[in-house]
Length: 241
Image (cartoon, rainbow, N blue to C red):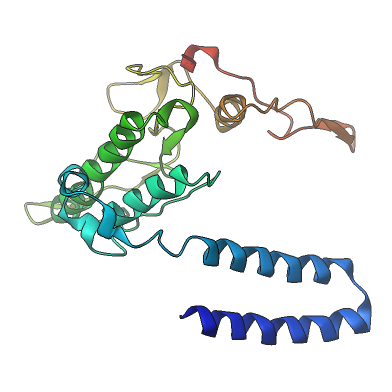
């Protein structure tokens, strides 16, 4: 979508929203109009962001050739670094197709090849530019996978099921201690046997690294003291540099 097309689209949308605002007077509508305008200013202020012509060949050797192709995870990692350089405070990347209930032996190596080099390159690139200390990189999903087989156990067809009991993420920079593995599962990777860490502790620790005390906005509702991490969570100091 060109800049002119985007501007025309938002102008038309603003007209409709203004009509509705005039009818009901809901301040949320005015807020939404302002948000769209702020988003457009953000988009229009960095037109060079996705133009990689200024990047040296060393960048593509670091991130891999996929970084030249828009839409790949490698290209998005490179864009994440360029966004961080410009002061963007929150950047989220997605990479799909890890749900290998079958076809694991073919699918998993492809997914790893798409993300491993690019993820390492992003951390390395941020460090080389002096940005890693002030940037927290978090890599993870919403659950783990069983270590045992799901489906037919044949050479060309096997997979793994969802496993919410224990799973792994990694973090880098932003005040996190480097070179640390925290927590341990049993021999079957089924249960946690050492240093369990729930999502509330993880969120509290992440917020601490971002300079936010998760207890500061505590409020009482229906007899419970809610905060940014629900009613739980503590900062895990073992993870901090």
